[in-house]
Image (cartoon, rainbow, N blue to C red):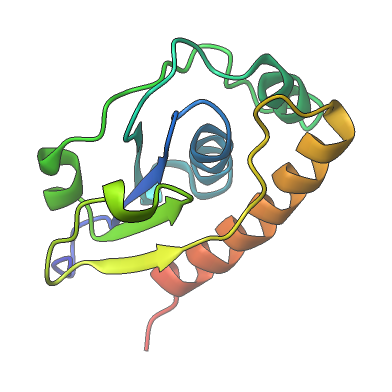
Length: 138
């Protein structure tokens, strides 16, 4: 894991890197500030972030409109202490020594704002728990 003076790093991964992983990264940046390094990527990245996800996050004052889907690379996984997968299945690479969590979340792609809000709120709760696990000293 990280050295005592290093910041932990988290990689959020979903298929298109356009909804769930972008919302999770937005929450982690907003809630943890610069105490945790944040990355997000997709196994098959889309062309743009889901506009309904952008709208749902904007309702909470978090702007993810400038985010862009990125391809998942081995380097991104290797550089991360924690890898959070969200529906990418077998396409997510596995590296020994990393902490992995698989968050089962509905895919917001093609969904209306009501569904995306529920996904957003679920992600927020999980990110808050993640922050506590990374910042609480034993």
